[in-house]
Image (cartoon, rainbow, N blue to C red; front, side, top):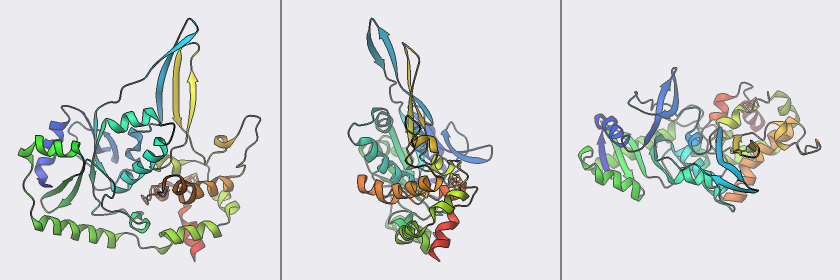
Amino acid sequence: MAFLPQERLVPLLTLLSDRMEVVAPILVEGVPVFASWSGQPLALKDNPLMPPQEFFLPQREVLFRYIQDCGSYSFEEAAGKARLIFGIRPCDLRALAVLDRIFGSDPMDQSYFDKRRSTVLVALNCNEPGENCFCDHLGFGPTCSEAVDLQLTEIDKGYLVESGSPAGILILKEHPEFFLETSQSHLLEKCEMLGQAREAMNSCIARSLPGIKEAIKKADWNALGRTCLNCGSCTFVCPVCHCFTIQDLGVPDGERMRCRDTCLLSGFSRMAGGANPRISQGDRMQNWYLDKFEYIPQRTGLLGCVGCGRCSRVCLAEMDRWSLEVKR
Ligand code: SF4
Ligand code: SF4
């Protein structure tokens, strides 16, 4: 554990960026996004709308190239790139733990884990949760509950830095000139800050786990399906959603592409011949909620929602209101 004075954060990241790509929240056209960092001002107030999961499961990626030679194929895979993601929040870290279990089940997803293994994660605990955040109501946050290389908590004049892996310890040991010793008061300050964050979090009871499960049971899915605009935005910003489709582009040589997809759109469940087991938008919405609160927990032991509130932030139809209305 160490104390990192505020003014030493950027010099430390600059040093680390000499040996790996540093990704951090920065402003792009006034909006915070996780992007490659090369000294731009950090945007650490709000968690970006697009989660850092994009660096493990991109919108589009080449899984491998295939080359045909005399009737047999050889394959070329891209190597993982050394990267450090700075500023990942506890909810997105939890979402990565869910994805690790999903992509780690047999057969393991090589492309996902190549990126996971070559990425150092530096988390930032949430002192000021956003107005849509409800991680605390799902039993974790606003501090990290998952293993992470380093976790930072902003306290007076700097950050309390805690290491959680050999990679994190190495950063502390290799660069002692950036860090100061911690005192008991730093730890007390951290507890106080995070206690205040929990209190500040939206205390709406309909966002507690029993409230959500009750709302799923009582919902009129046909009516909700008619309200939904079928845009899929809620799934594309969700750090846990991971539907994808695969295409082979090129004959006889070419690339196997993976593109993000969403179970909220009818094409995702449509089968050869045109049959579709989830024909209406209401069916697809119900499946989405059940996946998050029943099916993913059965498969992984963790909820498929981490309470980041992004789906509420992005939905033009304000679908979020229904769960509150059903509860009443
Ligand atoms: S963002 Fe809202 S309108 Fe769009 S698919 Fe999701 S629930 Fe429907
Ligand atoms: S369902 Fe909504 S609140 Fe839950 S993790 Fe996905 S985007 Fe966040």
